Length: 392
Image (cartoon, rainbow, N blue to C red; front, side, top):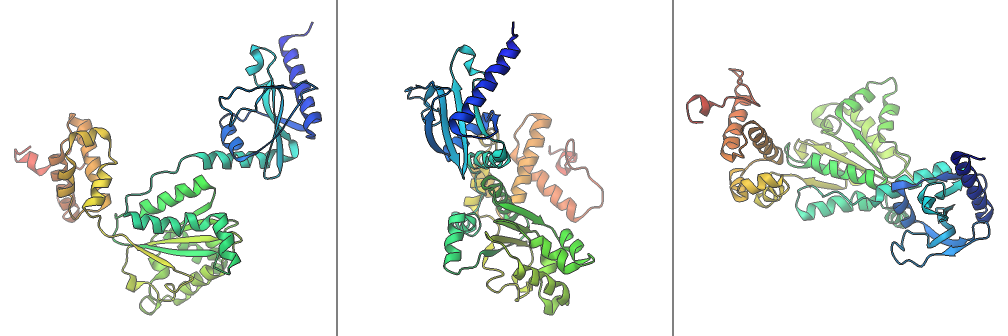
């Protein structure tokens, strides 16, 4: 007498063999797609329904029609990027919900590509993250010159008309005004959409130019196999004016690597800098190397208000928005975030959302950074000057 495990194995082998014969899939592998199922099915082409060992029972249940195979017993075929795969459903009992009776199958030789496609479909099915707090026109320029530019359909059209398959953007402005947030948003969208990405810091560039073969090492910083974005953070050293900096050899190597990159699918370079544009080498600023400049000045009242609206509900419920907008005139995004951090620290310490305290503490901390003499504590249990004077 066979055991439940033996019957389970026999049933599974029987169904897998029946799929192989019905769908003509050689050496099939069984797969439980789990959370990959709906994103993958949504991107796949539905094929025919086939009998399972001569039995086919259609299911007309209108619920979940988009993802359900439409049968109670049989095989549904699908195809994605040339890979054929099948879903078997053998609803013979209540146990039919078990993965022995309800699973997908794909040829063993296609399994790894199939898995990569499933990863891509799941990633692309996730909703895009919110864009950074920037003027809407600036976000649109940023999107068009990065994510939209790298869209395969757009790249094909650009190349068909003889356009360049690369784009250069420079984000400039004082520290703390949104350059990093803009890069972070583009980076996360690259992950979601499956584009390559790489961050290159001044230390990475310095290490490359000090390598045994600097030209080759720097070239590899720019090298991509497919469409993507290279982020160059604070690359002032590499890009400043050769007439003023006197480092023509280093910059010549950098510019040569920038021009020499080869990519079949396209590439976008995003540079950030805190220095004045008149200090950037004119040779770098020519079209083909740098195409778009986005300026990031101090946020105006509308942007400060928008950032406040993204703070935690409890903070927004306890503190007047317009008071924050008024009191933060002349502050950067980074400074506004520090106000929020101080508010949170104060709340954790004493259970109060105290904007006036955060404002005074921020001003005291900034003054201390400019005049570090007494080593005053900053953070939890820190004693602000007004507390010492009895004005707590």
